[in-house]
Length: 191
Image 1 (cartoon, rainbow, N blue to C red):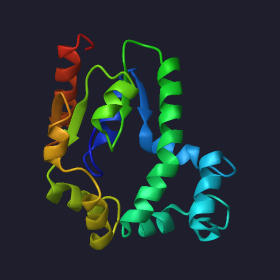
Image 2 (cartoon, rainbow, N blue to C red):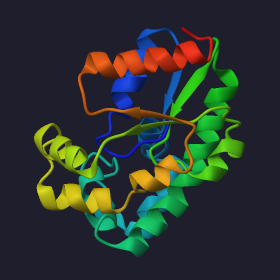
Image 3 (tube, rainbow, N blue to C red):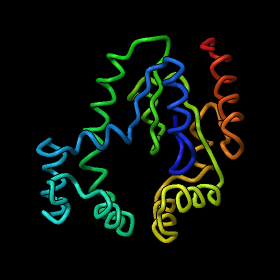
């Protein structure tokens, strides 16, 4: 499942989880692979220095986000360090997933992920940039400058539309969102 920040992927995956499907959230995996003393944590510390560590030795996510969303080379360095670790963990979880289907929420979906993870269908959860910005500011408490910087570093809806099989527009009610998910599940014989 592809979709940018503020699109509602978590709302969809929470619903799928409640429906009994295996769900893997790449953002959650990304937090786990950088836990203290894990290989990705060491690589981040080496690349960005001890300033990237909070007093409890966890990665200071706010500090790191401020750096990478305002410096393209730092974002490239971060992605180079973490993506391999994240991908390996997602593949391991997919191998152990049970049930009729497993869903992966992958914000930075690229066409090669289809083969890497053996995806049979890719859903795109989309909203307009204006809706995403409003959600980031109002619901997540980001300042507008930070929210805009994060959105600017993500694929556009047009880029996502070119690589997904099914689209879930998430600008209405939660009930409408769930109805669209149920429709897609029904089309796959999973309802």
